[in-house]
Length: 167
Image (cartoon, rainbow, N blue to C red; front, side, top):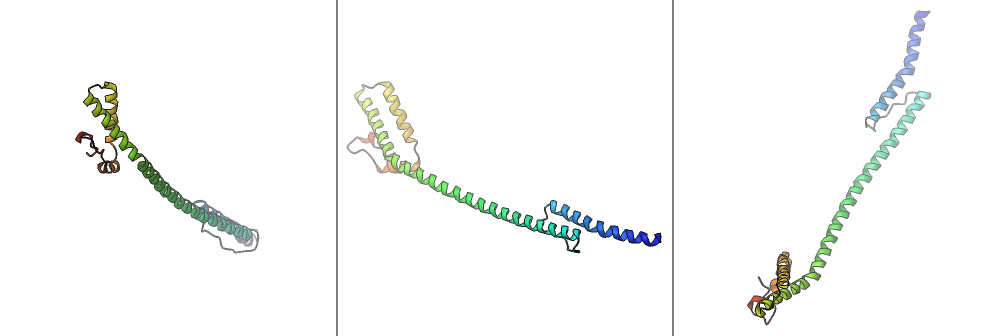
């Protein structure tokens, strides 16, 4: 009799532990990142119900993961668009500032040159004033090329050659 009970008890314990071990292995695979893992429904008992819960749980995790990845891609695209727009706006603001300030800077440069030349011609100059005007002319002379193009198109009429703004 014991000889018959031993295989039956082994079969009975295996029918309980094998599905539980299989489910545990599937959990480990899911933990490692494979959200596509599913179990086979073998029975309608508690272990089969647990397998169904596992499959439902993994379905939801997989959907959440896909949704999160989609949102991350969308966010990345939006960030790139925002950066492009901000670069364009920064460029336009710079252009507007340049366009507004350039004529004034050219005028300041011309006035400084006139002051320097008048100090030199009259020989009644103050060294500090001459030095400041010379520094202003140098700073304005180091301007970017668009200002140089505009400066090249302008000159002070009626002044002798040294007063030309053209370089």
